[in-house]
Image (cartoon, rainbow, N blue to C red; front, side):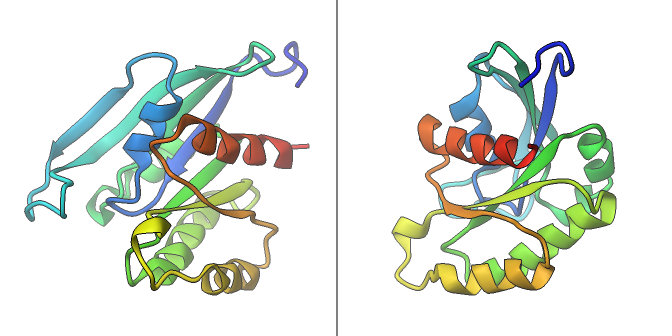
Length: 178
């Protein structure tokens, strides 16, 4: 990337509660992330006891020295007002989905529509977490949802705890910028 043209890049990670957005940011981060985690008001979701209520934020220094500002959106619908605020100025969005959730395809459609309603030209990459913990996950169903969107969106399985796997999503998004 031309460092003179782009001094910093902004990337947003979006998706439903429990998909691993905060975990992905922590795995990528070069500094301790800013987090707005609060206790889940509806009780724990398995091991998850907190949720993002405003945004998560950290930075990553890319191989070419470009700073990447990484923001995470809250997954709860009651915080949907944060989406246009956080997405503004982003070069792209990574949509993380929970592959163990029975409504993963519905979540995919919802989040692709949510991003598109804010900026229909924004590049998107989809990452699916927790596919190793469910026998019911089938990538084909998600790929059909993505194909119906009419956009060229790559879809990957990912362990949000693994820096290299999460960085792969970032690289896929950056490559789509051209």
